[in-house]
Image (cartoon, rainbow, N blue to C red; front, side, top):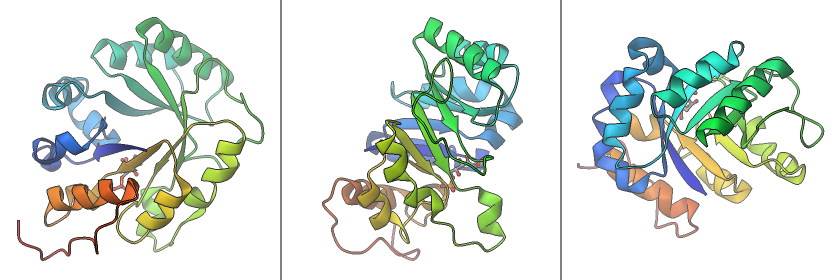
Length: 219
Ligand SMILES: O=C([C@H](O)CO)[C@H](O)[C@H](O)COP(=O)(O)O
């Protein structure tokens, strides 16, 4: 399993150097991309120590143009919403192939998950099962994305799992074994991001050592 660190708030950029050696993919979160534009991709590339950067564009139209922009700026992966038109998937995929880059198809806005392999024309390197932040802020305890990993993998999709992943559900996530585990707030908002990231990595690797660090643990 690969660990993808999501930076959704400019205030959390400082966490990157603290944990970068534990991380496989660095995500320029949608809010950061909207706030700082393509420069945020360059910034995170400079801090990522050569690790791939994902631009969380959540593209829904204009696939070729958005792909050109973010891959041209140095991103290695981008996200396209699963509800986008086949033409958008095909266009983003064509540009991704030209750059040797990757497309993550994000199901965050879809009520229905794909029922067959190869549902997205063009390019679907990973299918993101993503619990929306706002649903959780509304108080929903959502595990549907974790529960769906097995069926999507059975259809042949490589899965990226995102949304509210942290100490409360990490054991279930490790058991589901998606290809990519996306973690934002559980690391970036932790009292001790480094120790939390270490605990997450060891749990994902099946070598859990005790309990997750508490919010009050010393830095
Ligand atoms: O993509 C995200 C979300 O839609 C906000 O833009 C987050 O990066 C993703 O959900 C991971 O964040 P956490 O839920 O804080 O782990």
